Amino acid sequence: MRVVDLPEILAAIDADEVTAAIEEGFRRYSSGQAEAMAVGHLSFEDPPGDCHAKGAYLRGDDVFVSKLTTGFYRNDLVGLPTSNGFSAVASARTGEILAILHDLGQLTDLRTALTGAIAARLIARADTRVLGIVGSGTQATLQAKWVARALGIETVLVWARDPAKAATIGGEVVPLAELVARADLIVTTTPAKEALITAEMVRPGLRIVAVGCDTPGKSEIAPEVMAQARIIVDSRSQCLHHGDTANAVAAGLIDGNDLVELGELIASPVDFAEDEIVVVDLTGVAVQDVQIAKAVWTRVSVRG
Amino acid sequence: MRVVDLPEILAAIDADEVTAAIEEGFRRYSSGQAEAMAVGHLSFEDPPGDCHAKGAYLRGDDVFVSKLTTGFYRNDLVGLPTSNGFSAVASARTGEILAILHDLGQLTDLRTALTGAIAARLIARADTRVLGIVGSGTQATLQAKWVARALGIETVLVWARDPAKAATIGGEVVPLAELVARADLIVTTTPAKEALITAEMVRPGLRIVAVGCDTPGKSEIAPEVMAQARIIVDSRSQCLHHGDTANAVAAGLIDGNDLVELGELIASPVDFAEDEIVVVDLTGVAVQDVQIAKAVWTRVSVRG
Image (cartoon, rainbow over all chains, first blue to last red; front, side):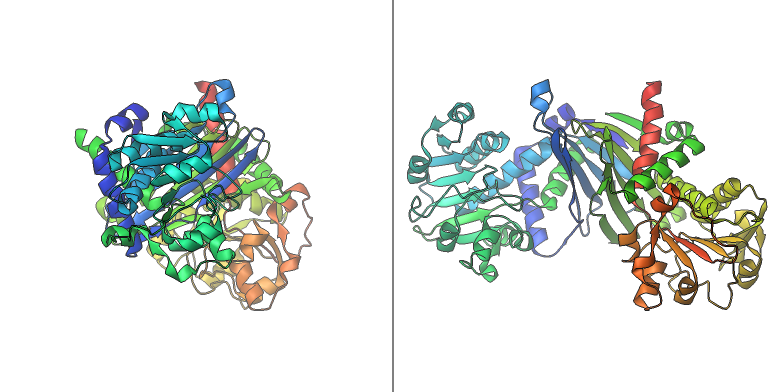
């Protein structure tokens, strides 16, 4: 069993290679080749924190991956990172634990951002010039970087509840209504519990990648916006359970049978009409973790 | 993050200390202090194998534990251990991963055996002289060792489908009916799918610790035997879901409301009548993993 620390993990990452691996993972997930563990969760009260365990296996692979991530948001008060965790890579032939990638949760952050970029490229209009980032956390920073790179654009607008934090993302800080009016494509990355993007704000042709709404009780995109949109989901079953899609289904405004999975869109890209509103709802699935960990482990193990 | 390999783990184990820790874990579990993750599972077909992920936190503790174990039964054909895995010990205050105990599944084997010994001591009659072991696998060997030690007895009878394997346990190999007739306390450790211990075999005063029946579809003790017995379970909720208790409840022969948890029995030991049949049904709970991993980590981290 090899332990791989963060610097070696980061050195082993080729963003294009990982992006291709994640795309392949979604394709295989949507064609029924993935087996996933029940998601494990623990919550802590004093100080507040939580822990998630996820794992999955893509049938036919030589390895499978199980990860543990923790988030303790008061750690920054004592100078510690708020995220921690690791991914274990194990042999699907013998069960041996091959590697512990001690990534402090950064592989999860990166796979989420690269998936945002994959989704953005699939739904962006050809004339896309302005990216809007909603939120000011780690995902806001990473989505701004990777989505802008994927779309080859430079103009980034940012809105967050705290303007000082919004300014750290590196774009032009604007009011939310202005951001929605000016942006061609928006990435939402907040832990909001009430919808931020409402029907009055949106216009035909808007494209949205919704990343923040990943657990029950959260909401970023109003059900009335979802009702106007073509909806792509990372996981049909998960997005019917929680997230902006589930909220709109629960409100009776969309039909769960109309959902297209990201893996299906990757396999068969769609030429969306210019004036269509398109939303990709990303709640996070373990195949993303599998694919990024496999990509890292493949490079690390080859180097020896 | 410290990686602790098997020799260091084994050197850090004091069986009496771990036994006390597991007893404390069951007491706290039964008094509602444990939070457990959903159990994760993956299965593999070629070669056949499986993987389980479990994790739990005892409220108030400084650490929590998540473990991954794998079993690939054809590994012995290529000279590899069939069991693999690790336990991760993490801070419940910061979420940092403190240690990976790379125990190859041996902590699970040991905590299961020590729990069998705890259960045996709580239900054994004072005049217990003969231990019966049903099965010939790892748990048969370990239960024979630790239960005999806990009860201070020397006479061990063994039955298994394969007499040659039964002989490896180190006791007197006998037919199953003879084992049940002669033993004062029996430990069942098989993966049987049809009950082995039937109503015709048992007599008043028999004590049974049932270890093997840990997943749906397994059965070691006939429902008619369960119906005659006082039943102790490691986890009320889990034993109503699968195991010998669940089978007897499903058969309508026992009332799920009559179950006593092991943690309750540890907190308030019962002086069973001489002629009572008593069965302890052990399906395995994550607090056992938490307590053995904590005990190891406490010793290892003190040594530095």
